[in-house]
Length: 124
Length: 107
Image (cartoon, rainbow over the protein chains, first blue to last red):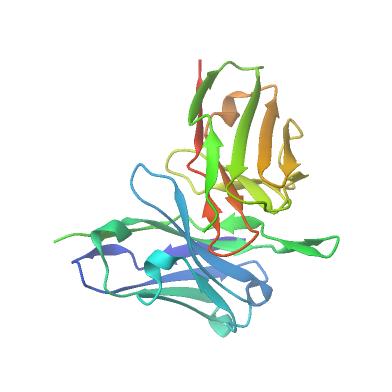
């Protein structure tokens, strides 16, 4: 059971990058999936998530209109297209599976599987 | 966005100590909160979900409580492998928001 991110690297401000997260050993096509980032020496920041069939997506305000989350269930893959990148987007980006647990008619997030992270550096 | 405030930001404790970390939400979030442990250079690990439900495989010395705006994570009998940074995360609404983290260090 694992998630493996790729696609990180060094990009100039204003540039674009596409991150990928490949899943294996888990029921990818039935899971909400998330991107979470961590700037160097800082805390965790939730970035975006996507419903199992791709029909629902949510973003943190700071990336709306610049980042797009998507998935390909046939390839067990999650993506994050990042455009108009800024220095403040520099971070390790993690993908995380949400086990989405129901207890007494309420759905709860439970990010139980995480990738190892991929570093994105935005700098000239 | 809901703001999550953890306290303290860091603490020093000894093996065997009882440790309590607090997370306060800027508005009521029922019990829609999780706790995550992160060690340096590693991905976070789920500890608690739904404020008080222990994730499978996590030792029973970890416990969570709270509802509304105030939540706690307690480690009863700190072990060497528990030294890490802990984050709360609200899943009541969007955007999801983390607390700033609490670093648990060895005294």
